Length: 196
Image (tube, rainbow, N blue to C red; front, top):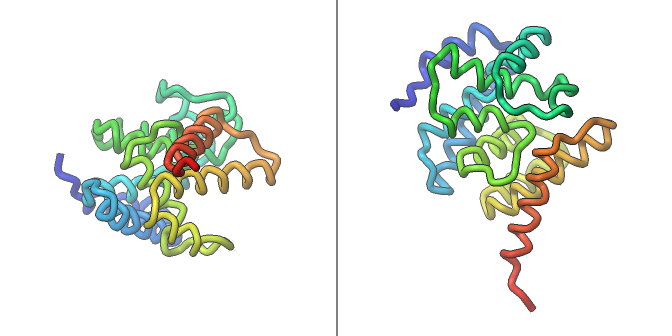
């Protein structure tokens, strides 16, 4: 498949606010850089990053309708958390509206907010690209950017820890796949540490 972003950019420009469109471009660019660093296809990573928030600004009822229609495996915590719907809706939307069948791209959009255990390299890249894009300015973003270009597994563990802490702080629900992802990358990082 040829990953031509021009049609997608046109669609996003017409359907997203300027701020969200700029964020999408920034994430796409970050994904391209991470792909070059970690041996993933840069154009494909750019394309997946560009699409990650395609349904972010749809009305809540439209997002939820797409989530339910998708027939994707969705846990109760995701169904009960409005801010997570756009990722599931987005994956289903690009599959049905733009005939994107590449499972890696679909899963990169689907899991860019919650993550999961055993993510593919592209899924990891989109997850991190969203977290460290140029428009992000949270407290530890510079540290997160540095780790992302040092060790993918370490960056994923830090990203999951950041996500879980932030959900808990807001009194939100932690999806099962997020907890599994955190545990998965914790084990990977433990295995990477040299034994004394």
